[in-house]
Length: 120
Image (cartoon, rainbow, N blue to C red):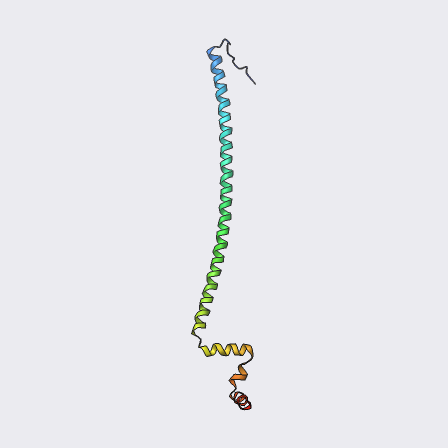
Protein backbone atom coordinates (compact mmCIF):
# COMPACT_ATOMS: atom_id res chain seq x y z
CA UNK A 1 0.00 0.00 0.00
CA UNK A 2 1.76 3.03 -1.31
CA UNK A 3 0.98 6.40 0.15
CA UNK A 4 1.19 9.64 -1.69
CA UNK A 5 4.31 11.56 -0.78
CA UNK A 6 4.26 15.15 0.28
CA UNK A 7 5.42 17.77 -2.15
CA UNK A 8 6.56 21.33 -1.79
CA UNK A 9 3.59 23.62 -1.53
CA UNK A 10 1.21 21.00 -0.15
CA UNK A 11 -0.86 21.98 2.81
CA UNK A 12 0.79 19.75 5.38
CA UNK A 13 -0.62 18.89 8.73
CA UNK A 14 1.51 17.61 11.59
CA UNK A 15 0.02 14.10 11.48
CA UNK A 16 0.65 13.90 7.71
CA UNK A 17 4.25 15.06 8.20
CA UNK A 18 4.85 12.57 11.02
CA UNK A 19 3.39 9.75 8.92
CA UNK A 20 5.66 10.67 6.00
CA UNK A 21 8.63 10.92 8.36
CA UNK A 22 7.93 7.42 9.81
CA UNK A 23 7.66 5.94 6.31
CA UNK A 24 10.94 7.57 5.34
CA UNK A 25 12.53 6.24 8.53
CA UNK A 26 11.29 2.69 7.73
CA UNK A 27 12.62 2.87 4.15
CA UNK A 28 15.93 4.14 5.48
CA UNK A 29 16.12 1.34 8.08
CA UNK A 30 15.43 -1.28 5.40
CA UNK A 31 18.10 0.20 3.14
CA UNK A 32 20.59 0.29 6.02
CA UNK A 33 19.79 -3.32 6.95
CA UNK A 34 20.29 -4.41 3.35
CA UNK A 35 23.59 -2.51 3.16
CA UNK A 36 24.73 -3.98 6.48
CA UNK A 37 23.84 -7.49 5.29
CA UNK A 38 25.68 -6.90 2.01
CA UNK A 39 28.77 -5.67 3.86
CA UNK A 40 28.56 -8.63 6.24
CA UNK A 41 28.37 -11.04 3.28
CA UNK A 42 31.35 -9.35 1.61
CA UNK A 43 33.38 -9.60 4.80
CA UNK A 44 32.47 -13.28 5.19
CA UNK A 45 33.50 -13.97 1.59
CA UNK A 46 36.81 -12.18 2.11
CA UNK A 47 37.42 -14.10 5.33
CA UNK A 48 36.69 -17.40 3.57
CA UNK A 49 39.10 -16.46 0.79
CA UNK A 50 41.74 -15.50 3.35
CA UNK A 51 41.23 -18.77 5.20
CA UNK A 52 41.51 -20.65 1.93
CA UNK A 53 44.74 -18.82 1.09
CA UNK A 54 46.04 -19.51 4.58
CA UNK A 55 45.18 -23.19 4.19
CA UNK A 56 47.00 -23.24 0.83
CA UNK A 57 49.99 -21.56 2.42
CA UNK A 58 49.89 -24.02 5.32
CA UNK A 59 49.94 -26.91 2.86
CA UNK A 60 52.82 -25.36 0.93
CA UNK A 61 54.70 -24.74 4.16
CA UNK A 62 54.15 -28.34 5.25
CA UNK A 63 55.47 -29.63 1.91
CA UNK A 64 58.51 -27.39 2.18
CA UNK A 65 59.15 -28.60 5.73
CA UNK A 66 58.94 -32.20 4.51
CA UNK A 67 61.46 -31.43 1.75
CA UNK A 68 63.72 -29.74 4.26
CA UNK A 69 63.54 -32.80 6.54
CA UNK A 70 64.46 -35.06 3.62
CA UNK A 71 67.35 -32.81 2.64
CA UNK A 72 68.61 -32.69 6.23
CA UNK A 73 68.43 -36.48 6.39
CA UNK A 74 70.38 -36.80 3.14
CA UNK A 75 72.92 -34.29 4.39
CA UNK A 76 73.40 -36.31 7.59
CA UNK A 77 73.89 -39.49 5.54
CA UNK A 78 76.42 -37.77 3.30
CA UNK A 79 78.22 -36.35 6.32
CA UNK A 80 78.39 -39.82 7.88
CA UNK A 81 79.70 -41.31 4.64
CA UNK A 82 82.27 -38.55 4.31
CA UNK A 83 83.47 -39.12 7.89
CA UNK A 84 83.77 -42.84 7.21
CA UNK A 85 85.57 -42.19 3.93
CA UNK A 86 88.04 -39.85 5.59
CA UNK A 87 88.79 -42.43 8.30
CA UNK A 88 89.50 -45.30 5.89
CA UNK A 89 93.16 -45.97 5.25
CA UNK A 90 94.49 -45.02 1.88
CA UNK A 91 95.37 -48.59 0.92
CA UNK A 92 91.76 -49.70 1.37
CA UNK A 93 90.70 -46.99 -1.00
CA UNK A 94 93.32 -48.05 -3.54
CA UNK A 95 92.22 -51.70 -3.23
CA UNK A 96 88.66 -50.66 -3.78
CA UNK A 97 89.58 -48.83 -6.98
CA UNK A 98 91.75 -51.74 -8.17
CA UNK A 99 88.98 -54.19 -7.45
CA UNK A 100 86.53 -52.07 -9.41
CA UNK A 101 88.95 -51.90 -12.32
CA UNK A 102 89.74 -55.62 -12.13
CA UNK A 103 93.41 -54.96 -11.38
CA UNK A 104 93.54 -56.29 -7.84
CA UNK A 105 94.46 -59.86 -8.82
CA UNK A 106 97.32 -58.68 -10.96
CA UNK A 107 98.99 -56.53 -8.29
CA UNK A 108 98.07 -58.36 -5.09
CA UNK A 109 99.42 -61.76 -6.19
CA UNK A 110 103.19 -61.69 -5.37
CA UNK A 111 103.98 -64.70 -7.55
CA UNK A 112 102.37 -63.18 -10.55
CA UNK A 113 104.00 -59.85 -9.84
CA UNK A 114 107.44 -61.47 -9.57
CA UNK A 115 106.90 -63.47 -12.74
CA UNK A 116 106.04 -60.28 -14.56
CA UNK A 117 109.25 -58.72 -13.28
CA UNK A 118 111.33 -61.77 -14.23
CA UNK A 119 110.05 -61.85 -17.77
CA UNK A 120 111.05 -58.27 -18.42
